[in-house]
Image 1 (spheres, rainbow, N blue to C red):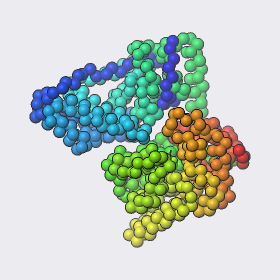
Image 2: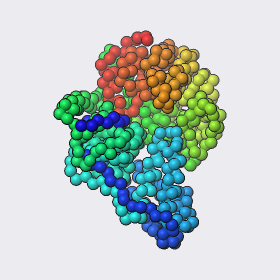
Image 3: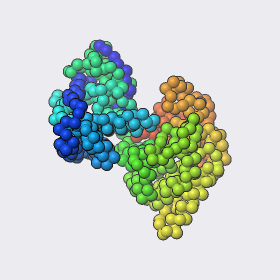
Image 4: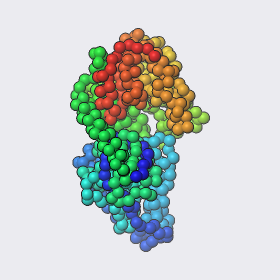
Length: 545
Ligand code: PEP
Ligand code: MG
């Protein structure tokens, strides 16, 4: 028996037998191959073939895992249609490289850029470039990767799994995924959660030991992976799996239950999203609203700012899909860890304390007004709440509202319909805003506490640093007191308070936050049912910390 500890990426328990992904076995020669003319022809044929394969995979994935999971193959196809990328590959062939070497070297250049990006989501996109370029290389070489599964209860093991690998699999035969690399936003992790297959990623060195057909236990809750379990490990695992199943079944029955605390206070349990397609998962989990729509994803992964119409359509799609339930859309929160390739920002010593979020937006009304106009228009299609990120004082809120008012008047003059009952709030994620909550509450419609940042600023502990992660404690008394001040300040003015940082879905914190008076909890869709269950079992009576 051998135990490994990885990162739990998709919840659940699975016992199964290893099947190891073999890498494609081709070599990339140097030199001009058959000469530029012939190599360009081979390249064009391989790319065309890849695009057809991607259309097929897209359809299969949409059928088996839904539209959202299938979108990755549109992104792959767009990459092969990208004039910049393909132009560089063709130039390399014209310059004397064979087609395989050209695609490999250009793709590696792009992968190197993406893999050093600070944003985890963008960093993971390097894997997509690898996947799509591998596809073209395989087409050029005539050799394919093998990951065929014919028997049930298989645990798929790989250094990493690409969208193409997972899309090609017979899902009913797969009981778990285990990979040596990847984080919670890696493709394997996202796909496994969508398919509800347990997964553990980042299991370093596991491929050196494991052999095809070996028995394995995969614990997607704790991240433990066991090879060749002994009797004791097996029975402990079976007990944990049975308890988990029971708990899951009980949670599913709460999908359409309203969240009301044991002593009768109605609470909103909502979902956090990054793009319109994420709404499906929130609704499937019985979310009562969207508590945070991070609009910066609309601005990422592209070459220029999204225009008003594109933004309007994205916001309207979310509002309509939520069908009258509340939707909180956060205005652009760029800077800090999130950068845009087409919007150069000054190099700063402390970007988290620098030119970002509302500070940048107020400095660039040309850019901010496009978003405000799109929001005002979308407000006519549902229950919209808009919030500004990184507010440190009243003046910023007033300035943002003045711009919103200017946009409203312009739109009306242009004869364009705008939402009339939009609520306007702020994120409380800077300690100053929490301390001044009482004063701010007189002016805003609501607060949403952004604990991811509030904790890092309160404890001076970088949220990205593993070295100081021991200091990053959501339950630190200073953090709890700031949260209490925020809630009390809002309630004194008859305003409501939500929370959209990770802490809102933290099962250790939920009973405490409920008792402190929090009115709305917003979290990733997968945490909604467990949060609801806890709230149903606890009281919301006032308490202090
Ligand atoms: C937060 O800071 O808690 C938050 C929700 O915003 P983000 O994680 O996007 O900074
Ligand atoms: Mg934040």
